[in-house]
Image 1 (cartoon, one colour):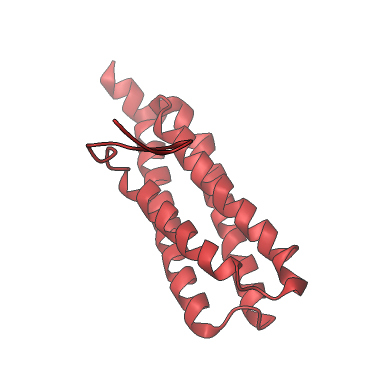
Image 2 (cartoon, rainbow, N blue to C red; image 1 turned 60 degrees about the vertical axis):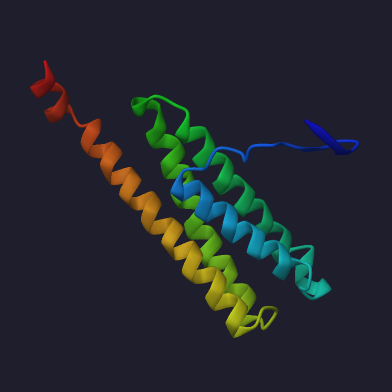
Length: 139
């Protein structure tokens, strides 16, 4: 293991790949960060900060759900869905306030929409797996 500098380490092997949903959320957040830096001050520390927090909370909820048992995942997936829906609305407000241009809004909103669809699919799959009808058939 080679040291780059204090706190930064270079590994000889790449980190393990993330789940597709988590990778999509991370990618979207990295894009948001570049846009966040250029927001006008009037929205950067209010609406921009709230959007930034929601991105982190969505990633956190997905990460938590990933490592829980099937029965424990559903509340975290639902939380991620609620936060993603709020994120969509606040990004729209930011765009309508002309603090983010059409190109940036489109780039983010398409990715956030895909994250929402992936979360919806995961939630549906969990609902089927956790339904009483399936559990009684397994017994």
